[in-house]
Structures are given as structure tokens and as C-alpha cells.
Length: 122
Ligand code: SF4
Ligand code: SF4
Image (cartoon, rainbow, N blue to C red):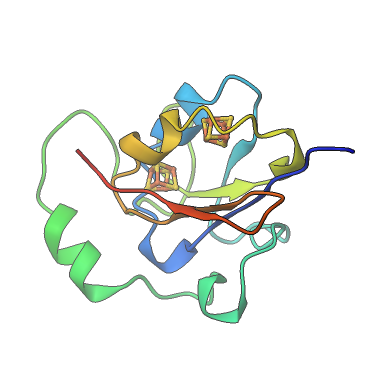
């Protein structure tokens, strides 16, 4: 049996911190500019797609934080900013590293027995 995960990012909550991209050992995530044509190229349901607006509660929580990351920047500029897209979900090995590092608490992973794992920021 082939073991395949489904991974997506709830993009309206993504701060663009890039932590998922930094920690994933199998390159599941790519950081994209918000206006990129493939910004919705993962298996996110309709309400997890980027439609031009962030979730207000997440924006309020992170808007003024000075921690060296860009938050809610339009573009990904080599460090952080933009939006994360789970372009390579089936490669996920469920190490859970991204789940504890995701500022927006917006990563959702479903395993092959339909267990669902969601990110919870430490
Ligand atoms: S749980 Fe999956 S997607 Fe997240 S860091 Fe580990 S391998 Fe990557
Ligand atoms: S860790 Fe979460 S909030 Fe940060 S870029 Fe990845 S999906 Fe977005």
C-alpha cells in the first residue's frame, strides 16, 4: 500500500512566516507571492483558498510583532512573506515539525486513514 498524505494551508490565516518551509524535511511547502497564479495549488477546500483577504483575528495577533519575520507581506522575498502552499503533500512523513511552528495555525494534514492533524502554535 502506498502511504500518501494530504496537506493544505488555510491561506487566509497564513502570516507568511515561512516556518513550515524552513522546517519541513521533505519540501512539502513553497512560499509564493500572494498574486502568484499558482497560490492556490494545494488541496485546500474553498474556505482555505486565498481570495485576497486575511483572517482579521490572525492579522490582529501578528500585525505589530517584531520578530525578524515579515508578516502579511505581499511578496515572498527569500526569507519570509507571501503565502505558503503545500505543493508536495503526498511526500509528507508526518514528522509534525510544521504543526508546532505554524504561526497562523493553518496547516491541515490528513493521513491515509483519515486522521486529521492541525497545527497548534507553541
Ligand atoms: S509533518 Fe509533513 S509537511 Fe509537516 S514538516 Fe513534517 S513532513 Fe513536512
Ligand atoms: S508556518 Fe503557517 S503561517 Fe507560517 S508560512 Fe507556513 S503555513 Fe503560513
